[in-house]
Length: 109
Length: 121
Image (cartoon, each protein chain N blue to C red):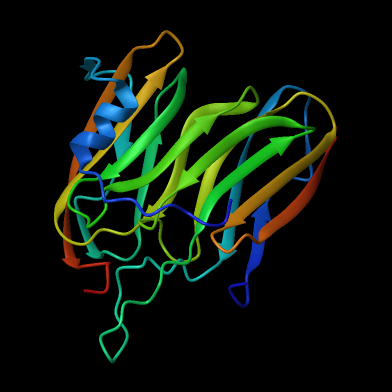
């Protein structure tokens, strides 16, 4: 596992039913592109997060296929519709098989 | 899942052909927002917006591998737009292509001047 991976998400605590809200996510990850070389000229192997998904109560909001051209500490900002109270689930999939998850509840009101 | 097969880097044109199946692309219906000049190619903010799109593919045509990301929007997407930060190896065109529910495509491109490249060359 890449060390020090920490997901951070910004989600409003509450929304009105049917409202469109903005979500911001950031995860600390080196996103080693596989293009760089170390001081002795050896290629540093690729190690990135290759997929990010956000769902709300099991329904998909966005599913992103990521390639090495995504910057270190991948950041995504997007919008979601909140039909009812529930949980946003954010998932990041690492090249090495690790899966990082974060859940944020949203109340209606 | 974890072991990716070795793939020869496909060119940007190949990626576009794979995504669109060679279909014509409109010039309207998609907006790509990128800076005119990026001082640091390691982290260049971009926003894509294509109302009604099912998915949007982003390519950096001048990178060693042109693929950047593909956004697939689900039923609860509040809009078909997203913002992220990307790496650019040098001055080049960034291309975004939207695929709509009806099978049509739209393309937008933006030239970004990069002062310091972002691929650690």
